[in-house]
Length: 70
Image 1 (cartoon, one colour):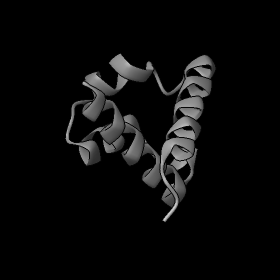
Image 2 (tube, rainbow, N blue to C red; image 1 turned 90 degrees about the horizontal axis):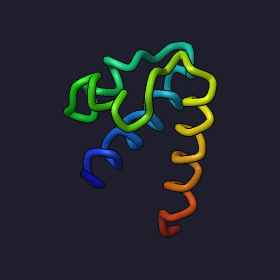
Image 3 (cartoon, rainbow, N blue to C red; image 1 turned 90 degrees about the vertical axis):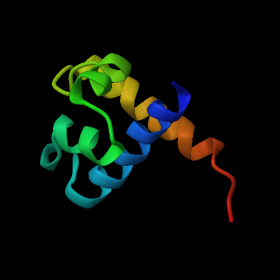
């Protein structure tokens, strides 16, 4: 399950960096992560919920902090 969550986070980071938050849909994040939109919603909830946005951003920042610098 951790790998799925990490794949979703990686996809979200890449897509948000490329197209901005408003330019990316849950289905695109899910497709790039190799999961269904339902799985994205399971881990992070609806993209339209501001509370869920905070959760996603916290997870993204945590993932960045945990990633070793090259």
